[in-house]
Amino acid sequence: MRREPLMTLLMAALLAAPGEAFALTFLELATGDEAVVPDARSVGMGRTRTAEPVGAFTGTTNPALLARLDGSVVSLGGSVLKLKEARAIPAYDSFDGYLVESIYVLNDEYQWDQGFGAALTFVSDGLPGPIGIAVSRAPIRDFQYEYSEEVRENDAFTRPRDALLAINEVQGDGSVDAWTFGAGFSPLRWLGVGLALQVLDGEQDFEQRIRWMKEGTVDPVRLPEASTVRLRSLTGKRSAVGLCLSPVHRLDIGATWKSETTLDGTFFRGGDFADLSHPGVPAVTDAAGGSVEVTYPSELAFGISYRPRAKVRTSLHFDATRIQWSDFEHELWEGLDLDDVWDFRVGIEHIFYNQLPTRFGMLYRPSPRDDEITTTAFTFGAGIEKGPLRADLAFEVSHREYRFEDLFDDALYGGRTRTGTDLVEEDATSAFVTLSYAHVPFGG
Image 1 (tube, rainbow, N blue to C red):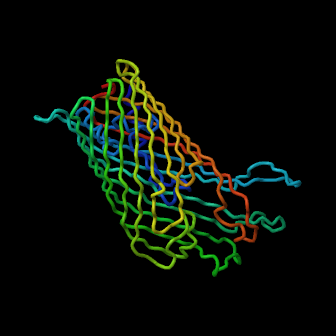
Image 2: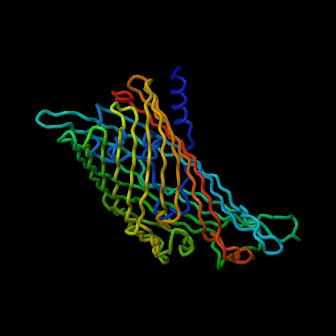
């Protein structure tokens, strides 16, 4: 099989991906969503990454594994994500009997993320083992979100029928990115240790808007048309400590601890900040701007990588990550009352004798907003190599379903306030591509 057309297709996917990014889900408006490490190999195995090197991005996941890399590697990774968000309310018959959930909001959103990194492993005279160093740039939290809801006239006797009254909108934008500088050392064959420093920078925008389409429906005292808040020049530092143990040649055990970090920046707001209550209870309502702090909690991850056969052709991977979300603090919103959560990831990779790897995985992740609301994702992927060039491709399909209150009260438009909650369904489909230049082909 000729591989040149596939390589061309992978390059085209990176270059042709949309530039706009709207894929954050509603529950993560305050905290930001997890930005995936731009390594398609680990994504294809359920995003497992703690006990197995992830190429040039190993410094961001477990710096101890940098000493396990062979030679040098330079990588460029990108992803495209499509999120389909549906909100529905129950429909009843004339006898007040339940019929079906009726969808009244259906949004399609897109996201594009990218990152790059480089890593080098070498042996120095006088040291008992190899040393690995790495630098990378990639997002770690994502604030991008777009919600749009059309409000229609529900009076059956008006003409025209279903006249457009207003459009309700909630929008978020921005991200927190990290420059990561990592180093790993393996003083013994079965032991690896590592340290990493992450220099963080970012910004966050949040806006709630009601676009009125029909005259006479605006109460200018009670209903401002738009409220915005913008966070700028968010900066901070975070450290990471990594450990890797190999008690037998078929088993690797990894652990990573990332410290708590506080981002300092400035904020500006417009409109009535009290209306911006979707992320949490507004804590600042009388200032047009000032300084702001956002504190992100520490993280602790454990991982296992197991090779059941003597020759490394099949490997099994498992990760568990604990995030202390109860320590999260945002000076602009209070009363978030987030839950500490564990997420679990499982993956498998098999390399065929033609050096073609195939990967599968699964991810189970609760929401810190409510740990009973969980996302289940299934992943799969493959890779190819041609000399020192390597390309990895992965796909992820995820689903989340929960109930949440109405975002915009129907009483604003002459209706009745709904006491029931909406059924919210979020389905995401993602594609990831990583292009690398390395000295070692697939299969080691």
